[in-house]
Image 1 (cartoon, rainbow over the protein chains, first blue to last red):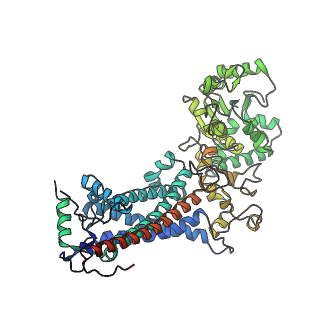
Image 2: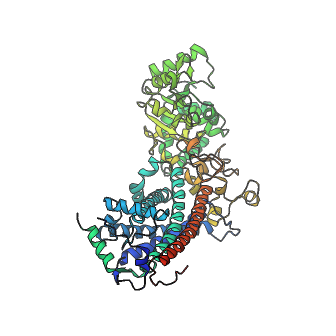
Image 3: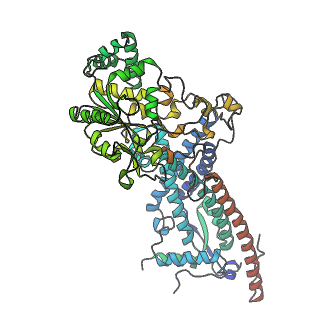
Length: 245
Length: 371
């Protein structure tokens, strides 16, 4: 038996489909809020962080306060980012089935098979896309890796901040890290992980557009509204696939 | 300098008057970051102090820390430090040589056991039984174990004595380590820096003579008064950093105007030391004031961790020394972007093929695919 029913291209795309779509509330408000309050600070953090690495604008005036402004913006954006990250982590444990941590951690064979299917689709070994109501298994694992990288970014960032801030609270929280790994290597990690965000965003936007076009279910809109338009049997399939074995 | 003579007596016999003595004490109180009211306590403690015996050991080193100590031309610091203690053994400057010199060291260890102060300079090689550094037929490790573990306190002067320094830098052919690692039973205070600053060495000794204990230390056993603050926060070029005014290359307009050396690889933001306030050559200057970025020479294992000295970030392992992390990151990002464009074109082609296949087989009425 196949847990993930494979919809042929013609079925999914035919206008007179027998599978009438229903409106499903997939992404709850905290998921959408954390998505955008992770994305926007990452843009700000990348620009200001790159400036702090390599100040590409050299101020001529003594009153511009350019680097200081960049650093201040970086810190404010960083704490917005941390708040959004914590909200998302909280929602891993209280959110619906599609935002729960179980949807991300590949503990079941079903998820590994789904990943294989997606890899086959992306590498043109398979003609059609497997449809999912929430994240597909490969995307979910990618997000899990990204959350891990964000966590490393937060830890290294806080460690770097604790060095300049000199706060005893921060030092108690993160002071162990600069003792374990030299501060220069922490800075290197903090810098390099930024590029993984760039790479991720490129792929994320591309695959969202691609899959949205394939599935025709309002995927792009869903990160604003929370709703997807899913054929009823796909929804049933989704519900049975995650019911206890 | 007679052993047992009081400090004031020694100073007076050298013609150092009360005024210069108090000036020296004030400088020490300031260096130790003590409140001014401690001046009287420091002065009276030094006046009463019987000169403790000091031995200066040299291992795998360049004698730079001895030079740093001896070359300080400012009369108060040099004289006071020299007169503060009875120096019984110092390979670089002592008059005795050969077996006589070694006998003097042996006598100090035997007679002053647990009372004398040892200053160690240089790293201790452990590889191949320690053959890479021997003095008078004994290995550095044997000497360090014998002397440092019998001393009241050991001051590890400079980067090599602290953590192995240059000698221990990758690939470390002699298996060098610092004093603390080589002789764990010794009571060690580390004065990192390449070389160590004589003002800090003097301040540690003054603290020891005044309070009978070594000053408060950080996780590396370095005194907090000297290693507790980031260089960047004390730097006179900091305002240029905040304003975004940077030297772009050596000798350009910004460099001539004294702008921040951040882009030239200055490690000031990653290094802690009191270099900017105590300075060198008796408060004359320090590297950043002289127009060169900080190397972070007082940082742990700085030859490995702070290099390349003229770049902001370490080299990425496996990519050689000519490629920066930024170039690698931008290159990989560009490659992924290009790959995505190719994949997008390929996906469009796949869709065309599917459309054709669907049209040949049972043709369902379908809307035109929007590209």
